[in-house]
Length: 125
Image 1 (cartoon, rainbow, N blue to C red):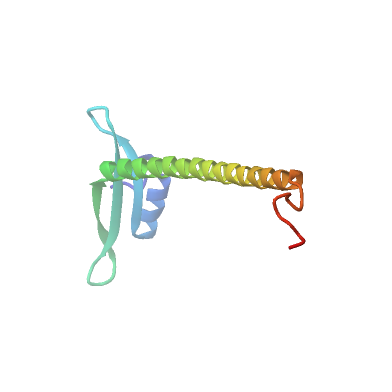
Image 2: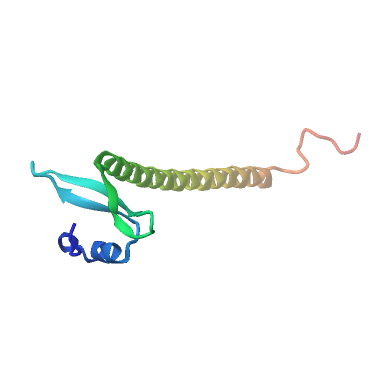
């Protein structure tokens, strides 16, 4: 592996300093599809603590990344649906309050039109 690391300056810095490395990249596969990969590299040391090179892995994480994106989108849709439900709930509560107020006002209006004492009730027994 060269210190230019195929045009990735952050990788070149890691190599020159002998640090461990972990990063995700999007790469175009030879079949034309874009894949997500997780690259890890760790420095190997000799018995005398000298740098002996790197050992690393490249893991295809495309399915995981797609699942994360799908989950993020589902979460946003659910949050939007929850906001709509809460707004509808508030609207129903407000309508119920207005209905109760109307019923109460109607009852007060009915009472105020009643004659008191009612003619069927005698106050002098």
